[in-house]
Every structure is written in structure tokens, then in C-alpha cells.
Length: 264
Image 1 (cartoon, helix red, strand yellow):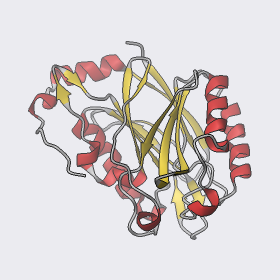
Image 2 (cartoon, one colour; image 1 turned 60 degrees about the horizontal axis):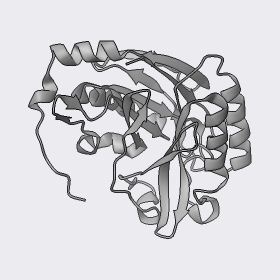
Image 3 (cartoon, helix red, strand yellow; image 1 turned 180 degrees about the vertical axis):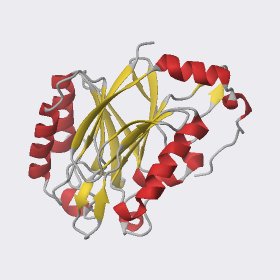
Image 4 (cartoon, helix red, strand yellow; image 1 turned 90 degrees about the vertical axis):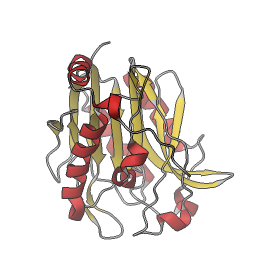
């Protein structure tokens, strides 16, 4: 299986200003002078962490998804990010994985943040997702999900791991950056996967500051790539499948993982 080239974009976000944010990402995408197989954007990439879905949520046929579809085709890469989505069942903080051929996969954020009104206004999801890119299995999750290791848990069945890369898109406050960095490494080690966390920078409309601290971590907890705190960055990291398989084969923790079911 070939190595996986992953680009992740750490950026400021203009508060609830979709036009400005899409223009901002136009500039970031233009900086990609190397081919990437997967591109990861922060949580609510087109608005920042808004809890005003009445004004800013879109349908799946709306501007946000259409923009990602266009960019995925132009760059021949899968793009992952989240945005506010409205359906007949309510409002969701929905992560989308958009493929160059037009396929769109979805994951609705499961754990809704109780220190904001997100948990009152947004509906939580109940289905996890595995995105396939060049033979790699990728589990994408959203921000607060990082604090819940059971929801993130990998599985090992019939000599196969459920996924190889764990991705978190986030608007994670700078005041809890130590938690962010520690848990990204923990999730990588306990699941024997690469873990990539992509966070925004700057102040949002609630006066909350974000330092970014976006990074890619290997299955041993080593940082492979990181973005400078507080600075905009477009980083590309290569994930080695051989390195992952050698480590899994020499340290067979997956064979001893507990089996359980999650009650929703």
C-alpha cells in the first residue's frame, strides 16, 4: 500500500463570514505546491464555531459542500472539514469527506459541547465513519469527541484494524492547548494509528482565543509534523504504511483490546 500524503490547514476564521472564509481558503489551497491525497480543514471551516444555525446552516446542496466538491476535483484530493448543516431532522455540526469524483461522506458530531449552547441547539450523531483513501482507512471526528476515548476506539478483528488514521477537526481553545496536545498523542498510542488534529487560530466571536497547535502524531506518540502556534500554516506530512505495519506487528496490543458495545 502506498504512503499517504496529508495536507492540513491551520488558519484564522472570520467570524460567521462565509464569503471571507471561502476566499481565505482559496489562498491556502493555492499554497499547495505539492500533491496531497487528503486535505484537512478545521471545524466549521466556513463560519468558525457558530451556535447560530438558524442563520448559517446550509443544506447538503449548499455553498459550503459545493465549494469543497470544486476544490476536491481541482486538487484531485479528498477534503475533510465540518460545517453547520440543516436537514429535516434538525441542525448538525456535520463533518464531510468530499472525494474528487463527487462522492460525499458524512459524520455528525456525536459529543456536543456543554460549555456552550451547542448541546441544546445542535443534534448529535450516532454513526461513526471510515473514509477510504488510497487503501488507507481513516476515522474522522470533531473537536470535543477527542475527550471520549471509547467513541474513538479502534478495533481488531480477523487480523485487521478498523482504521489506520484518526482525524480531529477542531475549534479548540488555547486555554486548553495542553489537553489538546496530550490527548492527540494518547489517542494515537492507544489505538495504534496515526492521529492528526487540525485546529483554528485567532479569536472568535465569543472572545475565545485559539492557538492552533495542529499536528500529526505517529502510533508511538511521536510528533511527525506540527504547525507553529498562533500562525497560519499549510503543512504536508507523509504517513508511512510500512512503519505502521511494522510497529503493529512487533507490538500486538490490538489482539488484547477489550470488546464492547456503545449504548447511544
